[in-house]
Length: 259
Image (cartoon, rainbow, N blue to C red; front, side):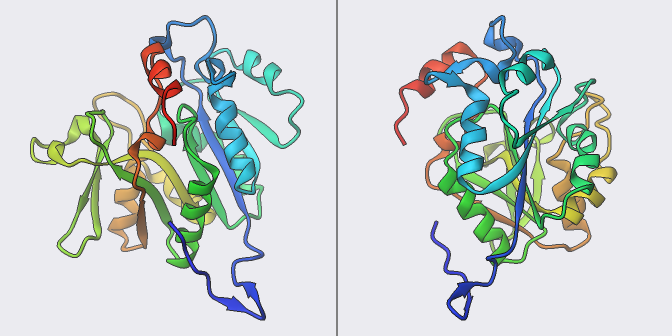
């Protein structure tokens, strides 16, 4: 995942571009079976979400907004000393796209070019991978870019459907996938970079799911593709970096992973 950026007078053309970040961390995390809110469950001697905060800072993503809901006061108290971290409350957990809607005042008050959006339960995600995704997004001049990998284990993530030339034609959540689509092993685990203005515009158009009543961030991809706006995928070699941790068993598995 190395990208050579065009240069002018010895400096990268994207030198002055800025990325801000959003971490989705409002869920209760019932399957963790912990008295703690899921973002604060320990993993390798610090809270799960703290790994994401550190990786995003190392990737020069600043400022950061943490979207919180369940036991929000406990999470705010834990990170109170971090002046680079903003807290956004999602009082009703109506899905990942709804979380971004809650963040619109924060987003619209920024001057950044890009918005990096990650889910807060993927502590194995490296800062180098985030840097590579941002570089890819800028080199390709996409409005939306996201990470993918071929998963060798079964997980209920969205499937990436490609056309005859390898282009993304569709992203479908597992619950809505056909039997053939469910056979696809290239999965999306909801780590994105968006052009800020594109995100602010399209997030308002994401429809409510008729079955669950939630609004899903993955549905924004179809809306953008429908308007023939550039969407890109950076496929990484090791799917383990993208796995979300939802249970104590997941934590134990991830503790043993060396990337």
